[in-house]
Image (tube, helix red, strand yellow):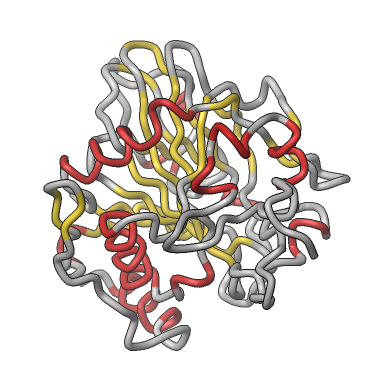
Amino acid sequence: MDSRVIVFILCMSWVVSDLPVSAGKKTKGLVASSAPIDPTRVTQISWMPRAFLYRGFLTNEECDHLITLAKTKLEKSMVADNESGKSIESEVRTSSGMFLRKHQDEIIGGIEDRIASWTFLPVENGEAMQILHYENGEKYEPHFDYFHDKENQKLGGHRVATVLMYLSDVEKGGETVFPSSLEKESQPKGDDWSDCAKNGYTVKPRKGDALLFFSLHPDATTDPRSLHGSCPVIEGEKWSATKWIHVRSFDAPSTSEGCVDKDPNCPHWAASGECEKNLIYMVGSEEALGYCRKSCKVCSS
C-alpha cells in the first residue's frame, strides 16, 4: 500500500471507531449492502488537496434507486451567498437537485453507514444526501465546500470532507476538476477529455464510483487547493449524489416538541414551495421528523 495512504488512515483513525454497518434490510426488492470497505478499490489521486477515488462504491441498483427517488422532485440548484449565508440562484451553478432525508430508507441508511466507515467520520456529522442532475451544458463553476460565512458554521462547523458519488456514466464532459491540485500537470489527457477537464486534475464520472476529498487540512484550517468544479455536460446527462460531512454533529439538538429547523436555508426553501414538493425531507414521516418543520408551520415552538 502507498505510504501516503497509510499516513491518511493513521491521521483519520482517531476520529471514530465501531461505526454501525447496515445488515441486509430490504427496500422495495433491494437489499441494503453490508459489504465491507475494500481498500484495494481505493486510489489516492491527489495529496494537495487530499482526494481519493473508490471504484464501484455503489452498486448499479443503488445508483438507480437514488435517481428514482429524486427524479420527480428536482428544483433549480442554489449556492450559498458568501456574506449572508443564504441560498441564492446563480449562473455559477446551473444543475437541478433535491435533498433526501438521512436514513430515509434502508438503502440510503446503508450507503450512509458505508460512507462513515470509509471516511472514519460519524454518520451524525453528515448532511442529508443531495441528488444532482446535469443536462447538456449544465455545470458548477470551481468553488469551495467550506464556508465563508458564520451563519452556515453554526450547526456542525465547517465541512471537513465531501463524498461525491456518480450515479450515471456521461458520454462526454461532466468531469470533476481540481484546478489547484499539485498533481494536475502529471495527469495525461487525450481527445476524450473536455476542454474544461484540461484545467486541473480531473475525475471522469463513472456510474458507481465515489470521490472523497477534504476541504480542511488535518489541523482544521481551510485548504484552498480543494477548489473544485463540475465541467459542463457535452453529451448525455449526469446524475450524482453528494454527502457533505462536518467537523461536528450536524444533527440539530432534539426538543420535546420537535419544532425546529435543522438548516439555515429552511425559510427560503419553505417560501419556494418545498414543504409540499419535498415533504419527506422538509416535514418528515411517521418514522422520523423532517428538517424544516418550523418553517413549514407543522408545529409550534
